[in-house]
Image 1 (cartoon, rainbow, N blue to C red):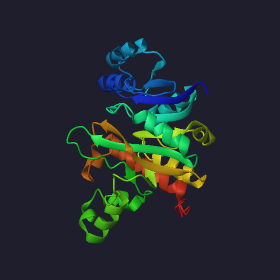
Image 2: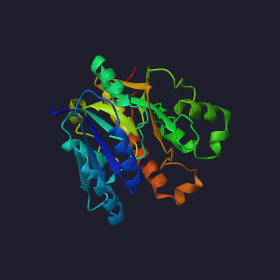
Image 3: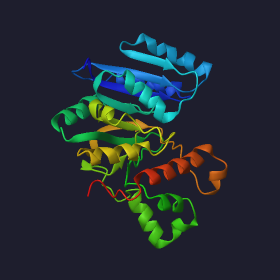
Image 4: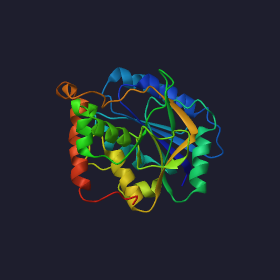
Length: 272
């Protein structure tokens, strides 16, 4: 491989955050070559213009899409261009404040050949809280229940809390079911073996789907808080039941969740 790490950033109208992200990446102190691949799905001339300043950086590729191809196809597009041993799928709002973050994560992957996906601790910029990026493998009925009055029933509330991993010690390195793909390190050959993210989905559920396959193939998914990044903490899928009728992203989340349930029906937990 020509590079050790290929960092893929998929943008949708967040050019300012993308520029801050890239600038903070180039302040990382690493002993290996990296490349950055930016895919812009914004279909917005002003946003695209702001991104062109990134061409000044060495080893940065900028691709402006004529149409919004979605989260899945956009990241797969970037991965096909990547020449690194490791892929990093990184949200545009991520900021790398500690200069050793990237080195720590790649070193961990090099030391642990049985790890397929690694994710850092994420801190929400707004209030300094820890982003709950770890989840149990999805159960569709719980995903629906958490957005309705049923969430307040004691048994449902306990199940939802477990599903959201509210009990997790976010200061401990550990194996987990799946990690949200706001920040992933994944082996490029492993990614390629699955053909990238599953095109059945448009935005959501590709991350538990990929982690399910990684576990099934005999690799681990690891939450690694020794490395820390920062983000804006805004969730596309946030909202309650009534929001379903008003918010396109929430409706898409439900659609993608149904596809996940169909794809993994009767398969069981691959960690067991």
